[in-house]
Length: 256
Image (tube, rainbow, N blue to C red; front, side, top):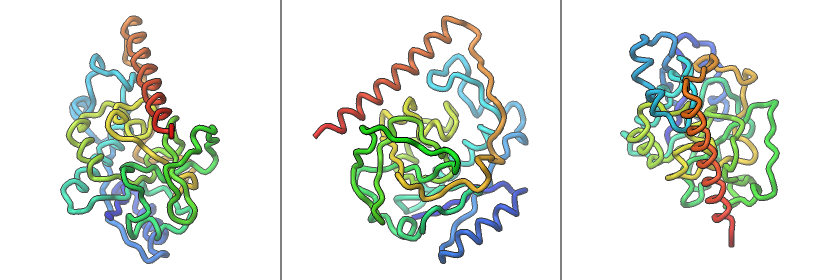
């Protein structure tokens, strides 16, 4: 399994902290230079994202931070696809391990067949309360852990996740132009990715944030670029439709 840490060149202190955090378990990682969106020229920011009139899932404009974050993770996906590995653990540099990572990062035997995308993070002060229907796990995994299907937005974003090369290849082929922020693209109940892959989450997070959810690659407040009330209503209906379809599929999967 590949292990990537997304890190800005100017955040050398965070990199040193991650070396200590990972090194205490006798593990290593590959640093991926993060893209600082605010340094990108306006034309590159424009071409990196889908045109406003073509948006269906993400209705707002993208901040430079969101674009930089997405491009950073896109680099990780491309590297996985070009490698000979089946899995990668991708993490940002603002986390700490909540449990011993070795059972998860040293092999893939704990991952059930058919699971190809697993969120492994949670913001410390935000705890997910699972509805009864959400606690039906696919299987128990290492150390009594459970995998739970993502049927609503998961708190943790892209701070840490396991991704299979099939998911990475799909993202690189179909979503190299940004249609949603990276965390929404992979873990939102209304993401178009759910048409092909089901996201899962570890009930007990492998990693938690080490900076109260503040990321140096993301940031900024997106603005809505929809000027037509009719078009806005149409897009909102599409988003609601996607959410309902995804929930319906999840419910079918739960049936015996």
